[in-house]
Image (cartoon, rainbow, N blue to C red):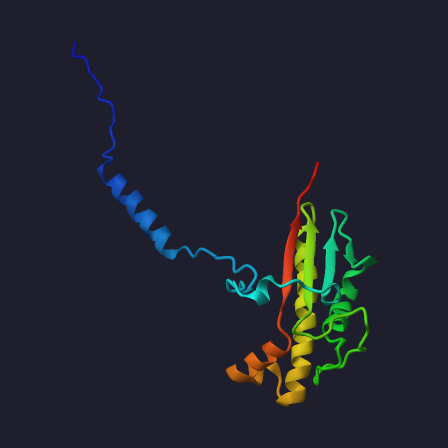
Length: 188
């Protein structure tokens, strides 16, 4: 009798590597990778002059603090998020020394002397939620935007979007965005 031996079936895998390589190239070429934009802020330039290291008078410094319980404290008062913008605008636009010709503030003795001298000090606890921190930053930014928009309408009779570069620089010089951000370290 004749014995039949079956040979194991084999698959030619020589072209399998080529197919896998072609699929890899296809997915690399057709896939789009989304890039997060983040927060569009320009970092301040390095400054070694006396202006940058000069002491800030207490009157020209507005302290905004956030704690781990997601509360906002401006100076010594706990405030709501909706109040931040109004308080920041009042602080910056105060005209305490009565030399600002474009300011419309109340000239309070407890608020800033001039928009160019007003500094916002923003501090937060390490456990402050990120979205809460960004919301407070947005309120501060909106306060500056409102003051700059009012100035652009008064001086140039234009909206901020219609300003030329030179006019926009003048508006930014009138209400400079001076915010100092400090992270409070946790002790426990």
